[in-house]
Length: 338
Picture (cartoon, rainbow, N blue to C red):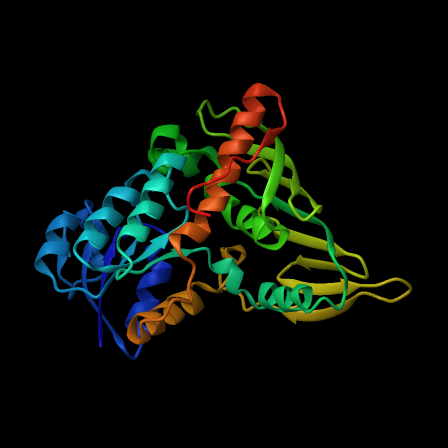
């Protein structure tokens, strides 16, 4: 039986906790949050205002870190140094330097596993698409496109002010809402060659985090990529991911994967499971990722999304920000973790 802890009882923990409590081989041992009101839904679980105390006093096999972005590295560091495996909510960290520090921490402690929740890689549509691309049946990849058009009112930032600050969030729409799309673009596209990007604040909220971003990407494979994301849409529209190969066009939209070939009608190939309720657009693969990672802990496996795997999307964000500032196309620097 795996002994599990949770650090941070905000919105995303409400997806993690049920997965833990429903798992037949896991037990929720303790939770931590500085807000005592957050404990009310878990009256029978020991609660700690300081996660360091929890990690010291409770004998845990794995801890889920569901904290604001700027706390990802310090909390991960404490857990790893105590030999506790980590499931870390996206993004890897709030800055590229903290992200690199987590990658270095992972490399220095190979006996401790750090899994990053980029769970959209495990969506049924994405898994199917990955198999089709790797099969070679449809030729080489020519281009990828990722579109995210969501809505975030000013109250979204007011209720949790850390979201509105570069010092605590590390950014806006890229690092918070569209990190999964950036991850999938580089996962399918391969090594990044260049990026030309632009960021903006279309909404008059007065915060220093971007609400809109776009980028043109070239990959080492010769493929190109287009990325666009905004929180200025009127609603939370379906994320769209499209891959154009030599012999077919594949599109994931409304949680459905379709294929279009010359002189043929569009065909449905796969459909994702969906979360119930208004936040269906989150995707439903958290449980799939968490359960799989638990198996890797039990079997001492290596098949999960490592910190080093999550670094590339953080690098993309840094390049888009710098390109927007300098108005230049930037080449990707060789990273020590690759």
